[in-house]
Image 1 (cartoon, rainbow, N blue to C red):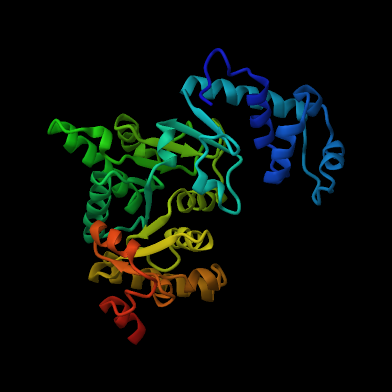
Image 2 (tube, one colour):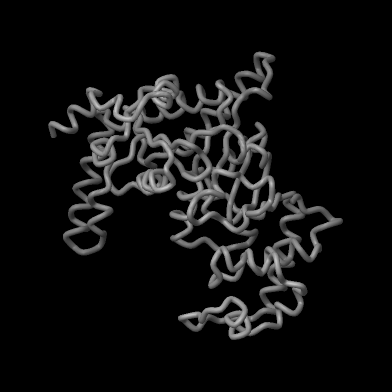
Length: 354
């Protein structure tokens, strides 16, 4: 729903924003309240004990709760969404992206600026390291550019490095087509999933790129209402949405422990296709990966990182069967191939030998 001066005070809208803010409720519990509550004002007066009785379970940890304050904050969020011309997608709304709805922990609400209709169109998620090499930068932009030219939307996380270059590649495809007088409506756009509130661009240096994304018909997405404060766990939450929005995720350069490999894990958990670009195994990328791996070994020895983070690296995914692709056209070919077709890939052979 797009909030306007006419509907931003609608009780059903405020109710969903109110429920989204209750962190101790599960998704299904929030949906139950959204569908069954007959009075928002009565809900705001409920104690935690009242809510526990309604959901049929006890809250393990004592959590500060002030229903009246929560209602006030929900109304403020609705007003800010109206000012931003921000679309709010409830999980049971027809416009909510079906692929994302299918994951194990979809967002209760999505906040969108720009063209939210893109979320239901064909897309590919492109992720990777912030420590991108020149070869990785070129590979990322070309992949995203070619995908957009083919009418495929590009999903990424607006971070510097691979994410930013993926968005830029799709933006460039739009501008190039527009400059030549072509039909920009058939060009794929780009979707930026943010770890920050919908009214905050993170990192701050990506504001210009975010503006270009909106200018070219793209979309900014967050599960966090305007004014919500950033938290470290938001990054992992953002990664699950990136993996959940597309039928396939492509990783371009990701050394051991990279957050992009968390997105890769999510993609596999959601039974989506996962690919690695051959740039991941280029000479400069290998050098970066070696430095990162050595640092992780030291941190692991000091007890500062987990064994899982240490062992999470592209080679593991390749050995488990993730195909390696050369470019967007090769990605399209790989999508149509039977599982295991690329097991004899030269890069994979080298990894198995190592």
